Amino acid sequence: MPAPRRQVPPWTPLDDFLLYTCDVIADVIEGRVHQRPLVPSVVRLEPGDRALACGQAERFTMRAAGDGSYRHSNMFAVGGPTFVAGTLAVNAIGNSVRRNNAARDAQPRWMPDGFGDITATMRHVRFVHPIAPLSLYWNGLDAVDLPAPGVFQASFQDIHGHGYTSIRMHSPWASLMFALAALDSFPAHPRLLSATWLPPYFEHHAAAHGRYCRPAARLAISRASG
Image (cartoon, rainbow, N blue to C red):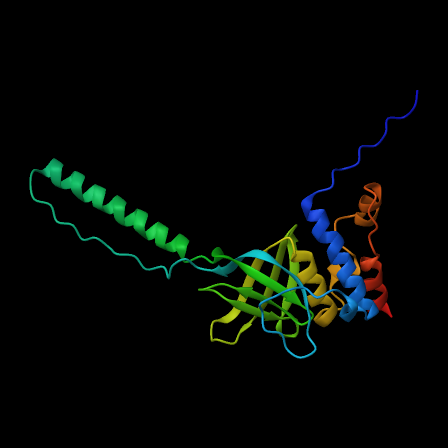
């Protein structure tokens, strides 16, 4: 009896972004990025820089929602003993809830900053947003990572006085942003050296669907080791 054929995972929209990412990264490593077709972008580019991809992203910042303060209610009650006791108990419960909520809000967490347009270039990524704009230059970052598919994470010293800051960009261009940053400023990043900035066997996955994927992951490893 013939062995059952192994089912090939479906091709997803994210795979299209990853396939394009591999093409871009291969050109970056091979020094041919300036031969690529121009990517339209409204972002101001520095001399010699080049827009490589544009799209949308949702920004998150690791920060507290509050400072731990809350309004303590000092309630007085007049009436019978039972009424007074009940009123004071309710007030005490309310104060406890407000205190616990304030303490929880003082704990840093990933807080959403909104959706915006991004442009990834050779040197940085620009997040265009009316309230929380951001420019991340690869050589100004202290750490980068891909904590989940489609999530680019970076940490840096904020030049506007907000101290050490960690942000996340939820975008299908997350792997592209990571690879560009790693090649520029983190050539020994474990994720770059282990090729885990791409899904496992992505080249084989692309081939199974009749698509050619340039060996960007292997080129990155060779460049780091050479």
